[in-house]
Image (cartoon, rainbow, N blue to C red):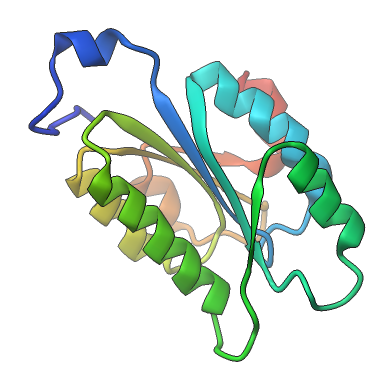
Length: 160
């Protein structure tokens, strides 16, 4: 995909890419992959934002949350009072960042859910690139075609 963002110019395109990570932990509940994800993201540019969404007060998630916090993630608590609440919260935050950022930007979204079918084109229309990471067997097939790049979470290290 070419960057059609009106403010991009040769000097900003030559700079290191800004990378934001948005993780739907309800969809990909594997905190052990967090360090691999950061290695992957850092190989693509400078990580400016990292958020992980779940109902952190439900169940025993203290060790997972601690893993994320130690790696600099913001753990966004999303109570389950509404179906797909984490999906909605992630999408709103991600699109809000894309709308307010004037620079070329790369978004890594960890999810295989269908709501990404709406989010991806919205980000791309803002001149942003989108990488989707999903669990094998738990991904919406259309996401492979929509995203600029698509990987399965277990393949992250191979792509660095």
